[in-house]
Amino acid sequence: MRKPRHIQIRVIFIFAVIFLLSLSIYCYNRISELTKSYYLVDHTNTVKLELEKYASTIKDIESAQRGFLLTKDSIYYNEFNDHLRKIKPKIDSVRRLTKDSRLQQLYVNVLEDLTEKRIAVMLQTMALGDINKIPKSQRLKNRAQRIFFRKHINKMMAVEESFLKKRTILMERQSSLTPLFTVLLMISALIALILSYYAINRELKISDRLKGNLEESKNELTQKNITLQGNNEQLEAVNKELEAFTYISSHDLQEPLRKIQTLISLVLEKESATLTDTGKNYLERIRNSSERMQDLIKDLLAYSRVTTEHFHVAQGNLNDIVNEVISDLEEELTAKNAVIEVQGEEKVFMIETQFRQLLTNLISNAVKFSRENITPRIVVENKTIKGTMVPFEKAIPEKNYSLITIRDNGIGFDMQYRDRIFEVFQRLYSSQQYAGTGIGLAIVKKIVENHSGFIAAESIEGEGTVFNVYLPC
Image (cartoon, rainbow, N blue to C red; front, side, top):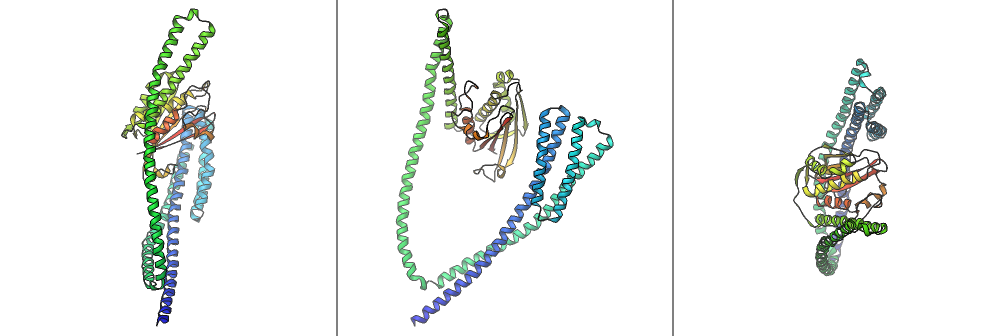
């Protein structure tokens, strides 16, 4: 009686395995089709985004052309050429992404031809230097050409939109069926486990013994976690004490420095006649060193404050903050005839006092590291972007971010130092070349972190630097 039952259980188990395997293969195919549907929807969105970027680049070229024709400023001429160089890679990207559609490939060829014609017209206008020198009939023809270009872009977007609708319907259908088969697979697996229970009873007993061992390991791990948590709390307490020590020490160090500076000033003022030139030189060097030391202590205090203090984030006005910074830095800006422009949206969610310090440090640096005989030009721009466009892994895709860009035309730096510049006491130039303590950008980074944001720097030596600050809205 035992042997036939054993055979019966084995047969049931084999059939259950075959059934589960077949169902698993079918579910795998469904999931593969669902994955393909997701890919097609994402691909269509990518094509739409590339088309939008392409149209935006054309607009940038037109803006640079208008700026040059109005101002004859070489900056706009350089921008015109920079954007012009982007056209070929972008049209190649659109062609590559749309290779699965013969219709779109034909449209891409037309788009490339229209672009070449528009660029030819713009180059002709740039050469003349004045749009009014072009005959009216030609200007009307150019206008019609621009309208046709926009309509063609919209036509390509419409094609992608139709693809998106079809692919979305397919994806939704796949999404609704796949969970059903997944549930069916789980139920079938449960039935197979029940029918196979007696056949694997001995294995379950072994599993019970292993479970006991696992429970012991779990208890050991729990105890280690408790110990680790205690160590973390101790470390946090030590960090707080260290921060407090840094603040108090830095604060108390200022008093003897002030006395040293006062006494040196008195000696130079009242005992100047009895001092040799060498003695005066030594005293001046002592005074300069003490002033640098005092600047360093002040920066340490500022760094300590942004590290230990916590403030409420509220909506603020970027224009107002920039105007306050301009007022605070009036002497530096006037000395170098610096020009500051504010563009884009006004509203930013910020810790106002810390954000003011951030802009002060970045604008002060832009003025300090300006090129000789070149008027410093600093542009502060703000716009809202999606979290998916923030180039940092820890960014939250569902959130919106304010992208505050601070752009200058200064000396720039080598991009291999793009991370090092945000470290404390890191300087790319000696104090004899440019004054400073090497803490300013470390404070900037800490302020950005206090906002749960991100910061990145891009630079070209001899041309300028761009700081991109991402703050959550």
